[in-house]
Amino acid sequence: MAKQEDVFKAVVAHAKEYGFVFQSSEIYDGLSAVYDYGQNGVELKNNIKRYWWEAMTMLHDNIVGIDSAIFMHPTIWKASGHVDAFNDPLIDNRDSKKRYRADVLIEDAIAKFDEKADKEVAKARKRFGESFDETLFRQTNPRVLEQMRKKEELHTRFAEAMNANDLEELKQIILDYEIVDPISGTRNWTDVRQFNLMFKTEMGSTADGAMEVYLRPETAQGIFVNYLNVQKTGRMRIPFGIAQIGKAFRNEIVARQFIFRMREFEQMEMQFFVRPGEELKWFDYWRSERLKWHKALGLGDDKYRYHDHEKLAHYANAATDIEFLMPFGFKEVEGIHSRTDFDLSQHEKFSGKKIRYFDPELNESYVPYVIETSIGVDRMFLSVLCSCYEEQDLGGGDSRVVLHFPAPIAPVKCAVLPLVKKDGLPEKAREIQHKLRFDMACVVDEKDSIGKRYRRQDAIGTPFCITVDHQTLEDGTVTLRYRDSMEQVRLAVDEIDRIMVEKVNLNTLLKKLV
Ligand code: ATP
Image (cartoon, rainbow, N blue to C red; front, side, top):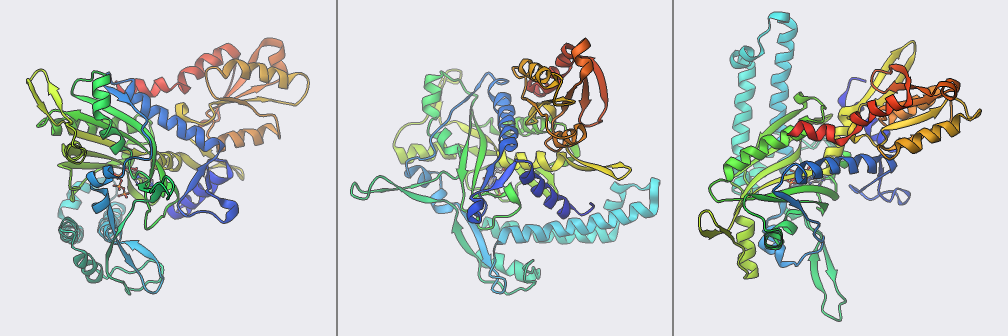
C-alpha cells in the first residue's frame, strides 16, 4: 500500500477494529471530533502518560506534579488573554459550505513549495545515482532555488499578516495564491473572521445568579494560579517546575485527521519557573530535553524536526514546535514556549495578589519567568500508532498487520497461549500468567488456532507470546515468540521472565534520558 492517505485510512480502521479508538457516541451517529479510547487504547494512552509523568517528576528533583480542576474562575481566562485573543481566523467556501482555518490553508500552500523542491531532488537522485550530492543540488539548482524563493516570499507575507492580525490581507493572500477549496475546487471564499475557541457553560442555578464559566482550553493556567501554593507548601526554590496531565477543550473550527485535532483532548504540560534573564538558556535546555524524550522511544530519529515560530504569541519571546512525520506530513506534537512573566504578571494584576519569588541568592523579589513544555497525549498516541503500524508481506500469500510498539508502552506485554484447550495446558498457562502479571500486563488467549492467535497479538502490538505445550508439563520449558522477528526460542519459564521483565519495563526508556 504505497499511498500515505491509504495507510492513514488503514490505521484509523485498525484502531477501531482492535479496540484502540472509537468515535464518541457512535450508536447515535457520532459526535464530531470527539473520540473514546477502547480497551487497548486506554492502556497505550496510560503508558504514554506514565512515561511522560515519570520522566518529569521522577527524573527531576525540582519538578512536582499537580492535578487542578477543569472549572476555574472565569476571570482567569480574562487575565490569560483567552477571552479576547484565543481566536482562529476562519474562512468559508460558498460552494462546498465548508469552513477552514485561513492560516492552515496558507501553511499548506507554503508546504507545497517544499514538496515541489523535494520532487526535483528525487528526480535528480534517480538521474545521478550514487554520486548525487543533495546539499550541493539544493544550493545550486535553479528550479529548487526558485521554489525556495517563492516559499520565502509567501512565508514573509503570511507572518506579517498574522502578526498584525490583518484578516483582509489573509484573504488577499488566499486569492493571490489561487488557493482552492480542496472539496469544491473553487475560489469562492467569504471574508476571514475571528472565532473564539473556548466552550462556555453555566455554573450554579439561575435563581442564585448563574456564573458563566469556561471549559479550560489548556491545562497551563491551573498551574499558574497554583504557583504560590506549590512554591510555598513545597518550599520550592527557583528554578523549579510544575507538571500536570489533564483534559482541555477547544471548539476547533476544522476537526480533521482523526485524533490529531479534537474538541476534547488531553495535554501533558510542565511550567518551569526561572530567574528573569535566564529564560532563553532554559528554553534551549527544554528544547533539547524534550526531543531526547521523544527519540528515546526509538520510532526513528528522522521522523522529528523542530519548527521555530515566526509569529510569536503575545506572551512569548521564543517558541518551537517538535513536529512528527505523520502520514499526512510533519505536524506539531509538542510546543516549547518561553512565556516570559506574562501569565504570572497578569494574574497579579487581575487578582490583586502578589505573585513573587524571593530569591535568597540575589536578595530580591521578582515575578518568575516561565518555560512551558506542552504536549498533546492524543497526538503523541497518534504518532506512535502511525509509525508502529506495518502491513507485512510474509511471502507465499501470507501477510500480517503488526504494531511495532516500543515494549514498555505496549498495551499488552505478553500473551500466554496454551497450544490446545485440554490436557491441563490452559491451567498451566494461567499459572504462568498469574506469576507474570505482577510485573507486566499479561493475558491468556486460548481461542482459535495458534497461528490466528499470534496474528491477533501482532495486531495489538504484544511484544512477546509464550506458548505452553505438552513438553511444558514435563520439563517446564515454553516457546517464546518475538513479535518483530517472529523468531521462536525454547526456554525455561524463569529464564523468559528475566528476558521480558527488562525489556518491558518503563525504566528501560527512562534510563536513556539520564
Ligand atoms: P495547533 O496549531 O495544531 O492548533 P496549537 O499550537 O494551538 O496547535 P498548543 O496550544 O501549543 O497547540 O497546545 C499544545 C499541544 O496540545 C499541541 O502541541 C498538541 O499536541 C495539543 N493540542 C492542541 N490542540 C489540540 C487538539 N485540538 N486536539 C488534540 N491535541 C491538541
